[in-house]
Image 1 (cartoon, helix red, strand yellow):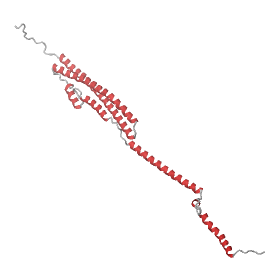
Image 2: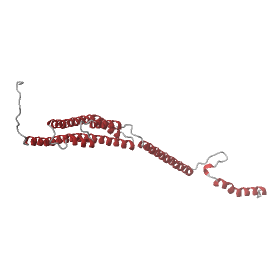
Image 3: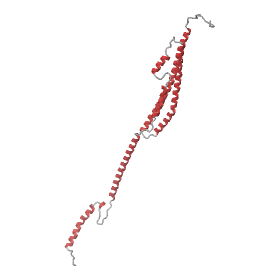
Length: 259
């Protein structure tokens, strides 16, 4: 049997091809699978790399959401600060000042004896001071009438002050309702504080009205007591003058019928 011998050149080529095959496959295995293109343009899909990309995108989106939430919180904080600095649109100062001025005007119009220390000292020294035992009857009567007029004037002044304070009740009630409404609807701390301060001012004005009424009533009572004490002293002087022995009856000439 004759044995066919392959040519030497063909054997050498097969050997070279066998040795070169692992070297040719090595670049294919070393190339990243997610971006390898074959000779015909095929894309090799790597699920592990895809999952990592999705996780990175999710983390990035979470960071963006956190930044957006932080910016929203800062914007809301600035809005709240602006509201806290917003001033109250309503002011009751003018109305309260008008009420106080009306009451003060009534006190300034006090008759005869005003609410002044110097005037009180002067008028009391003049009308309620030490009575002179040698004063004439006409002078005694005139002084008593002056004291009576002071007491009557004090009563009238007290009633006028009471009427003025009563007239302030309606305006105070309206202001109080407005301020309470403003306080409840305040958009910030400054508005709430200003509404509270104005309510305190309203309360102070009401207290000043109360002091005015008490002062007017006290003045009336003081004048009445002073008149009573002075009248008692005047009665004592007149009684002593009546009981003091005189020179008695002295006869004199009388003319009758034009003779």
